[in-house]
Amino acid sequence: MKKILSAFLLLLVALLAAVSVGSADLSMWDSLKILLHRLPIAGEWVQLSGIGTVYETIVWEVRMPRVLLAAMTGGILAVVGSAYQGIFLNPLADPHILGVSSGAALGATMAMSAGLSVSVWGLGAVGLFAFAGALLTVFLVYQAAKIGGSLSVMHMLLTGTAISTMLSSMISLWMTFHHDQIVKVYMWTLGSFAAATWEKTAFLSVFAVVGTAVLCAGAGKLNLMMMGEEDAKCLGVDTGRLQKTFIVTSSLLVAAAVSVSGIIGFVGLIVPHCVRLLCGPDNRKVMPFSFFAGAIFLMACDTVARTVAAPTEVPVGVVTAMFGAPYFISLIWRERGRRGS
Amino acid sequence: MSNNCLHRVRLDHVVWQPQKGKEPVLNNISLEFFEGEFYGMLGPNGAGKTSLVRQILRLQKPDQGAIWLDQENLRAWDRDALARKLAFLPQTIREDVDFTVWDTVAMGREPYRKRFFPLEEKDREVIRQALEMTDCLKLKDKRVSILSGGERQRVILARTIAQDTPWVILDEPVSNLDVRHQIEIMGILKELQEQGKTIIAILHDMNLAAAFCTKIVIMKEGSVYAFGPVQEVLTERNLEEVYGMKFEFLEGRSKNGVYIVPQV
Image 1: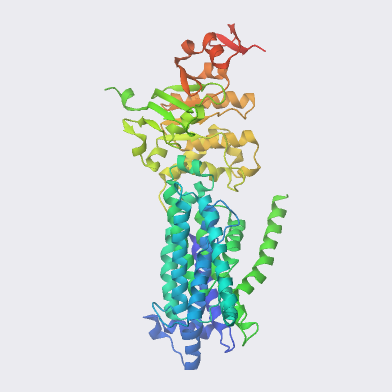
Image 2 (image 1 turned 90 degrees about the horizontal axis):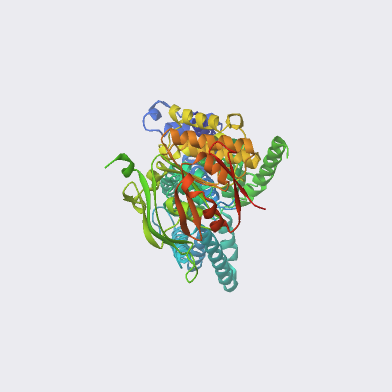
């Protein structure tokens, strides 16, 4: 509990640092004052004298939603990664494995090509189509995996991979006939938080909080599941129900995250493994810490993405892999040294 | 109605035929297990011992017939409630998982745990006792993945004991153990029986069965061949019939009278 609290505090500090970094330079102290000023009651006591309203706008309207969106997305991807790796008993499982993200990409591609403009819950046409595409894909994978009897996670994994590949090739086919869209679609799939708004952040936060709570509530049962399905049953787990709960919740989380921020790889695969190397295999720890670690990691990566080559933005997906992979490899080395194997 | 009648496992004409058109693996089995006994289940490979036990644990659905636990159809039980009633010791557990011995044994307390709450002191005490009984206390911080086969088997037994259920079902609990640990583990099972638990163990060593069990079930080709007290069931004629080979019964060589030796 204490550790969770420290992880939360660390998240807040990282958040403060992230909103302070950028082309308009601010001290962390000034950013803190601007953020506190926005709080309902404490805000009355914080004086903003000496800080221009421009800075206030930059911190509160521009950077804050973006940083929070990155944090929520990172948290979701990492917690879903840990859930999938447990439920599929597969260390290579990542949030995009069931094809949800390919479905989202296909939806986004269609919206971009059609040039639609609508807006619901802060999502533009691209986001809405991506969300719809993702949900349709979950439904499709689920139904396809159920054919010929009861649902098995192995079936689901294989079906998901097949459907994911099929959807990706549909996007390729579409782009073959719409050359002008290639750059736009490609950049979308790499992921970005440049278009963050408070509405999007609020939309994703609802999913993040409810979904993560649902997944973490099943963490103890997921531990038993990692011992094998029959073992879990004998220890009192209704394995079918747990699998359904985890897969449906995770898919919804990924659908929401991908539709606001594109397909960001690597976070969901690597962060849970890093957390496991640091605090052991107990999912009661792995899942909540993955959320915090994923949030901090993606927030940091996005800060790098928007500042390192400013005013040009580097795709955040590129940064996650460039920074995450070496760190992960160093952790594996350390672990091997510790175990002496 | 006496207490004995209430607490029991009853199989009622159970048929399990995983492949249609082939011989059923379990062929019309009717059998009743009563509280407080130590059942030893013997029979050649492929006789259906594990399949029968899996039916009782509801890991497999019978194609015909039904199983009753405490007068209620097994299918009506919640998994959670069932795990507080029946504990199972499988032949082996996954070894590529990084849990420590303590964490693994603590999983036996899972059916009693509340979400989001840490283990209670009572649970920790049960875990500690289970580790002590099985001689695993000194292993408690080791990872299960680095243990030897015999150590791992004792750890699973500790987990099964920690589950603290009135029924304990074991699939070859001593098959990977050295002779000292075999006797110790059988002694622990006996102790559990004396505490009032019911033990159902699949065994291969008929002398161990004869020494520790109160009732013997012999299975052959998917049916119950013989069922009853040790002396009545473990006879030369029965064993020869079931295993298709000769046995020698040496008198006066063990505390329960005979020592059974297969003739080479």
